[in-house]
Image 1 (cartoon, helix red, strand yellow):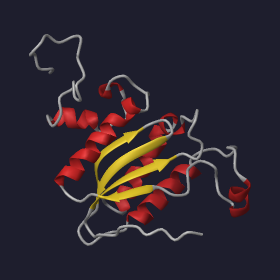
Image 2 (tube, one colour; image 1 turned 120 degrees about the horizontal axis):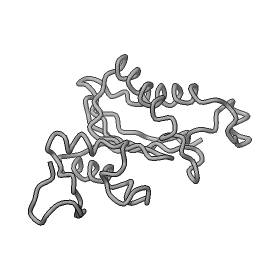
Image 3 (cartoon, helix red, strand yellow; image 1 turned 120 degrees about the vertical axis):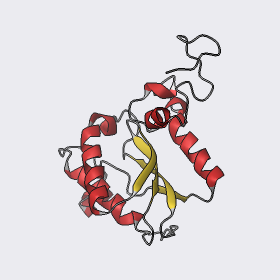
Image 4 (cartoon, one colour; image 1 turned 30 degrees about the vertical axis):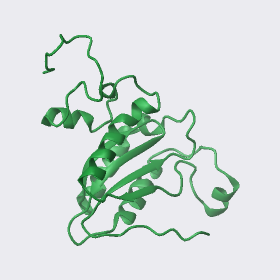
Length: 179
């Protein structure tokens, strides 16, 4: 098996992508969003980290985490989140022979994508990527239409306008700011 090298910088900020095993037609993450939230809260309580941005789509999620100073162990956090989520889902999903041999569920892909955020520009680009992703994949027409996105928190804090990314709001007059 290939040995993957992962960035491990204590107290750093990372971008992640985590996918379901079956991407097409799978809506498991949004159908079980309450379970996902519960598991993430539980893991954050025992192994703190900040979620800077996140979007949960039906078949994958993206997020940016900042770990506490002196801590680089995102691997254990993801292992616990993925395992906890899988345990909360009834069995019966399709599994490959290799998963059956290993005693694995067929809910999520084994690996995930991680990227060490390098600077403020890299951070902003990844936050934008997270918020735009539902539109990119055709799940919604406007960023604000997806409920499972940190975009809404950014709007509430005043960091982004509700009509972000060149969207037009048919209910606003030209020059009027949304509330």
